[in-house]
Length: 193
Image (cartoon, rainbow, N blue to C red; front, side, top):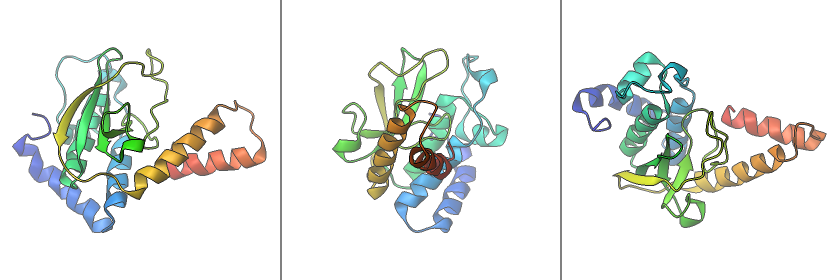
């Protein structure tokens, strides 16, 4: 309902058109949309919810949103860019992430979708983050398909490898040798982490 609400389409489609005007490369369009939403600040005041969820256009207007609200905005943008998308709901952790259609080797827990965290800048497929009051995601998500569409192309393979490297570097602890530190800097800079 929040994704297909007609009154917001007109305003959000302008944003989709601006993303398309930046590049004709579909994967780069997807990365722009994902990064844009990831960089919208998390709404800590809305973390425990009042029961009402903002529409995607409200997240843009307010310049903040909780995980589900930001995920709905990203789902709308990627749906309009032609991607197959789903909402990944983790009821045990009270969390929602985005799923984007991807080749099987890059999908999250056999869902058919690559995991994309929307609460903050992150790398596509990196599902190993720690969540406030929750820790790591442990439950299998409920999958709510939003749209059929194309799968991520080479972008998901590149980001998958970056996510693996990023997690391996983090596992080394707080003190890194120079090559690992430089690679960590490159990855955090590339994704705005």
